[in-house]
Length: 275
Image (cartoon, rainbow, N blue to C red; front, side, top):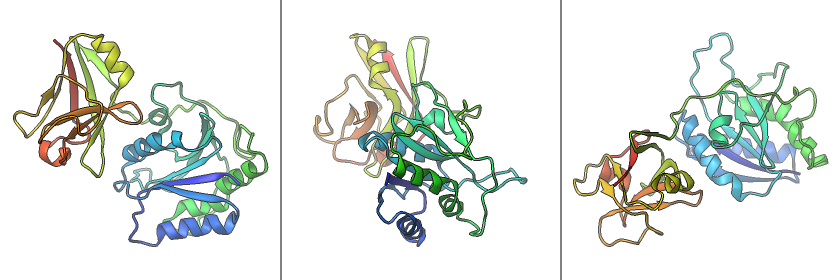
């Protein structure tokens, strides 16, 4: 059976993760399930996609990645969550139908998505993913177990089509000789991950002197003119900039909690200025 990963905002205090893993084990007793994270901030779809995007390349092709984050909706006619499936870089993703695919594949052409055209029974109020695993998503996992090489979810899933829905998020842009990015994620060490990837930064800098500018509560730690190779490249409580495992610019403080001490937050701007 296909390897299945789980990314949720369920937390570990409640029985929800155990319920989900138990249902998968009952349906697919010979399958494997791995956790990516269950500590996504409540209702934070952007954070969930960033964590999944960072982790999934380390799993083997053919893995099915389930993402379920509770989200608030104003759609009174259809408040029940629905899921889409998409195949990307040899992996399968089941995501809430909220326009997340462009965020997952940022920088690449958005792949087509498949939707389920029929009504999914709702016997378990408040836990839609279990219903989808009993129905359409369970069908996909079973089909992949029978034929790992398949490239489409089985009928009655609809044919893959371009997704016209996309969650808005400001992209990296250049203006008046300054490259503008944003903080996307703060990890449990207080390190801040941005949407500035190494290729974009190096193309912009082009071997010229530069400074990285950011908002900071520490007067002398709001800029840096170099990107280091590791977290301990500087002594004392000083700013460290480096590229993380996915090649994105990360902001840290040597041996300390950058998020708390700098006061920098998710969605705050980070700018690179050529000297």
